[in-house]
Length: 406
Image (cartoon, rainbow, N blue to C red; front, side, top):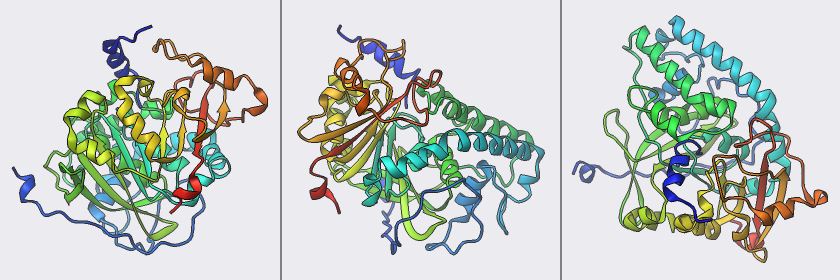
């Protein structure tokens, strides 16, 4: 059945998860000294006064702490603002919701990740997460040792906010928009593009950046700096100082984990359309994507668009560049995995795709799942079948992994 591409983009709106510059001077961070591998992050507790190297950027980290519902550290300009009843109620709600998620989802994800995709943690490789929205939460929970995380989707980058002179009613409105933006990923485990494009408007949560900062803070990290990213025609991602006015299509957040205070890491978010016709016109993006190699990839709740020929370019980038791929059935179709190149391990239960998607049943994957002796249990729920918990994951390892290790 030929797929109607107009319908595809309507569905994308329901499920996902998609002059002055020349005067700037590009800056680059170098990696700091690494320390041995860490344990997976446990129940997130607000990081206290840890000796981070390099030092924490207080304005950005205080902002992240504020919207993460954590009390400010000493000498914060937001100490007075957090005394507002609006913030206290928000903090209490977020703590309560997080505790439930920690028990029902996050703790199980970490335990599963430590054993079932252990080889993906050993090299501390970079992680590529396409059609992600601002979902640094699941990326960090499943891949806590990655060095640099790259998220690519359709949602705007947005801005951090200066709350130091904000009225209580405006604080309440902003925090309410954060609640709205978090509702789907908390309940269903994924962001819905149509809702995100509304929730992340400038007069609301204002982009993916605030949510990325919130997730970093809640998973035990501290923000070192934020840089604006602009990809040039050669595919080089140049970094520029961040400011609170300039609109950006790319952002890079440098952070450190409280258990590895001397290991500098980053998450880059790029707003981009990854359909073939868009990439054909965007040579800078295409050249940048083609530079990816020796990475791990995560794909979840991706609207099945990687099944189609119109997204073959980004699909080939992922298959060529990745050492490990963790995905559900909405990612790359099973038929595209050359079994002479990939070893695929299946988890959970494969069922018919939800009614919003037609023509994406995978008979070969269904057959692979029919042998119950080869299917492993999946102790947590992530994906479109959140109502029934009939979820699936596939962990694929490139057979030449020994040649690809750093």
